[in-house]
Amino acid sequence: MNIDEWSDALHPIINGHVPHPNFDSAYQELITAISIHRPGDIIVLSGTSGTGKTTMINKLFNSKVFKRTETNVPAIRSIFLNSDHNNQIDPKWLAKSLLSDIGNPGFVIEIGEETARLKIDLYPRKSTTDLYLTLSNEIKSKKTAFIVIDEASHLGFSPATCHNPVPLMSRLKTFAEDNQLCLILTGTHETLDMISKTTHLHRRSNNIFLKHYDIKIEQDRKNFHFFIKSFEEHIPGMASLNSQGDLSRILMKGSAGSPGFALNWITTACCKCASLGLSELSLECILAKSPSKRDVELREREAAIASQYYPSPLDESLERWNWQPSKQQSISKPDAKPHKTKRRSFASKRPRKVSAMQPPGERGV
Image (cartoon, rainbow, N blue to C red; front, side, top):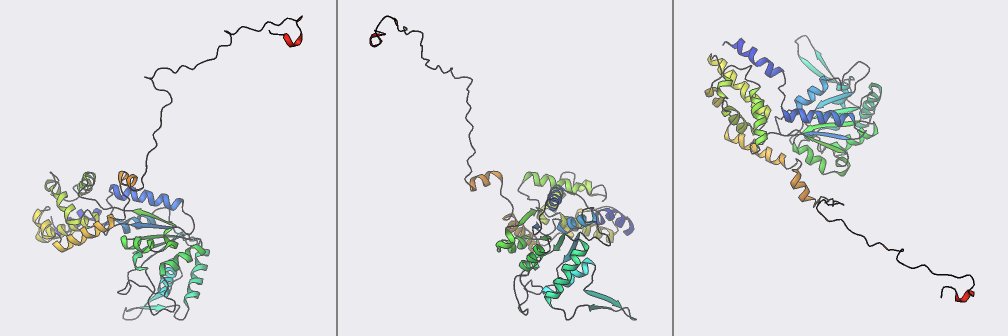
């Protein structure tokens, strides 16, 4: 196979979405939470890196739920990646980013004669209050109901250079309540840790966990194996390598049960095969692109920390809350003898003889 044939084989994998059970269940729960939300609620989509959080948000915006028109923008989305070393973002930059997404750009990109792109700030001197007032007017006019934020763990605190260094996430929550909005946040366990420290944020949050696959759980091993087998029809030679499930075990252990890392591993291995002019996937190319020992340890550590935020199993939950299931006592037992009640018999008593000729005081004697 040449490079073009390898590219055609990888096209449906790279540009498409291969479903797996954890993704499908979390997406259905997310759609349900959106349909029954209240203004001011926070929906948190959390999970380890590579589980498919960004893919789920992309699928959500491509669906009919967030269908966008010129006059109606049901949801706006921002990705916060340019923060400083302390994971801090300027509130002004946040407002301008949301304005740019809703259709009122806070920045304009101009192309000059030398095709040099220059980003121009449309609101250089506006205060933070004026920017959020402008954003509030745009939200009301476009009938926006949701603000989706990727990588929400960066919304920790405002920089120390700001005049009012309050928690930026708390300010955004207040802004959402004032404008009847619902916040949808995605991030790792750091996002849950940030929200849990503030009662104002935690009491109205709904956590949806997009779990990775645990190699210690048999059902997770089976689901991950079926996820890897879905690539066999596209990649030549993969079915023979995974006939006994050996390739699935290698990919699951190296990616710590993360579908995104496993998918990237397969893609890079196929690129290696294409560069060598091979006609099918080989085990040597897979091992050549395997993650280092340090990368595996980091992913396992992140998965272990994230598992602490997952709900515990049913037996552990009942034991934790000292739940004692009520034992319903049956009223009638089939093997028990019928209970005999002692009835009073009035027929055995003799009636009093009363004679009309006797004096009143002597009647019945």
